[in-house]
Length: 473
Ligand code: FAD
Ligand code: 2HG
Ligand code: ZN
Image (cartoon, rainbow, N blue to C red; front, top):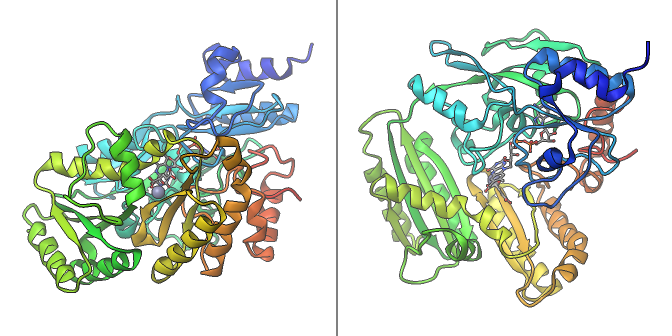
């Protein structure tokens, strides 16, 4: 019998309908949405079941070919993009979109990895429940990608990251075996909790095919405010005031620099400035409650009154009606896309202790402005989690290449500052290929050694998303 080779083995695993080798049809799977990373591939495979995923992994293993898992391809670090060898296989979960089960009594939902986040939110709402993970990319990103990057977003303050929202996983291991860990248990102390190995692993330890996720009671009242503040310190002070007064009802606390808001005002459809004068910083605060009439507007106004008394807030508006709430969120969620229109950008997704944010911003802004006069610093993000998207755009009058050539030096400055405040160089987007090498300088050597040992144990032949997360060794 003749050897079927890679195409034959993949065809046997997924059938004609699940195999893409036509370069024109593969295109969308080979670069990220910003076009910051691109590669080539031997094939794109689109399985419809866990058994098909396992068959693909076994076929690739037989041929010594690497597998690159891909969900919605909204990741920001090049983790889902193949290399340029043309030998890797992209395994897209975009046909694994079944909601397997909802259990409103156990408050769980079991879904396949390719289900889009928004579909999970909607399925939860249909049962009178809430699935609280919320990201600007929720209309495209998938549960498998959310798990593999341990996604954060705007609800972490109250509900935690994807890791906190997960009870069980089903995973195809690099040798093609299927681990069924789809337990919907809130307590299970039978040894090592293996699901946490795969959450945040960016596809380097196995392929997540399904998950049991936690649901919460639906939110029935909400209050949202847009507040102008004069400094990052004032934003941190405002956070302290709102948290002390509103406790667990505080659901989101997001910061935006004026530069970030300017980009949305320039490029976002229908975006408009809310105050008569320009402020250095803005904060979006949201409270929520399960009670239908929790009088949250009054509570938020009381917190803001205290902030005005203490000279912490410069101006504020509490949204009235859902259209205004949506407009405030559009100003916040539009930043990522708007920054793309302003030429090449450098994304730094850092966390420091919340108390250190003002000093971090002041010191790092100053150093960057000295290194590259005119640089546009686009600082925004989940300040209530200590997480800033400390992004940079090129000076208006500089050319793209000059800025790109400085990328490494500028990133080093940001990461050194982050590290000096005891922070992390990736709060939510992961390492992918963008921070794979630089992490060696910022993570403890013993931690890296343990990570490598785990990788070697599970994937000794290095076929599961190689070139991502771990520095070469
Ligand atoms: P992909 O981009 O397809 O993949 C991401 C990584 O996971 C890759 O390494 C890939 O190989 C791996 N992977 C994907 N599926 C699987 C699987 N089934 N099994 C194993 N590995 C897999 N992120 C946040 O955390 N918070 C935010 O607030 C946020 N906002 C965003 C806003 C915008 C506008 C955009 C474009 C992105 C944002 N992101 C945010 C980043 C991104 O959306 C998240 O990282 C998301 O979780 C990725 O999901 P995805 O399905 O697109 O994954
Ligand atoms: C956000 O919070 C995302 O908007 C995207 O994490 C951040 O594009 C970015 O840098
Ligand atoms: Zn974010």
